[in-house]
Length: 223
Image 1 (cartoon, rainbow, N blue to C red):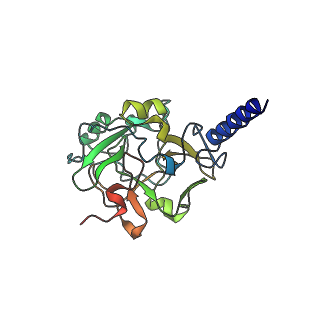
Image 2 (spheres, helix red, strand yellow; image 1 turned 30 degrees about the horizontal axis):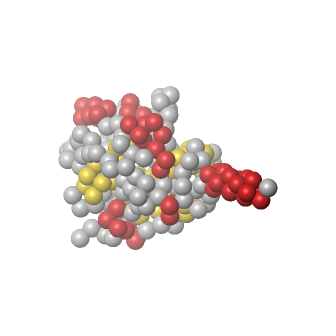
Image 3 (cartoon, rainbow, N blue to C red; image 1 turned 60 degrees about the vertical axis):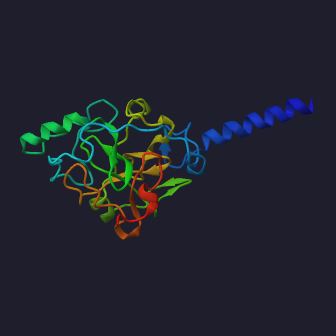
């Protein structure tokens, strides 16, 4: 009898752990299988670099974008997707289509980092929290650090990433944002071309997102 009760209690505890990953139901979804950040130290698979990693000289073609990111969505689970290049005004924008929805590039100074469908470096913010998952970049902050659009777990896996690290955060205004290892993810308007990492170490609180879900370069500035 005691053994059965013990097993039942253990099972319930395990279920609760899954439900409360990234802080339970506090403003996100798709995260039921994501473990807390502290438990994800070695979870990420070894990523592989994608074409164009950190070496392209072509512009992003998003000079006119704001924190709203004027993409209308393509039905692929990532608003705007790889076809969101109408605002570029240049032939080089076609190169944007070569970038997967989410991918990993190897930066010479930062190591393996995440980039989005335009080759933009993705970042995490120290003032956010991962447990529960909360974004503290709002208002004027979002004008410099727009929220990255969410991706599906299948898309993350296709990029060579551990899909368990990917979830979708629902912001207070109802918009969706990519989260990685329970951290909301952003891009930086100060990056003007693929390979730029100008947002790393800004204010001592912004860091390129490592493919392992941690701060790139160990949370240290580039020297």
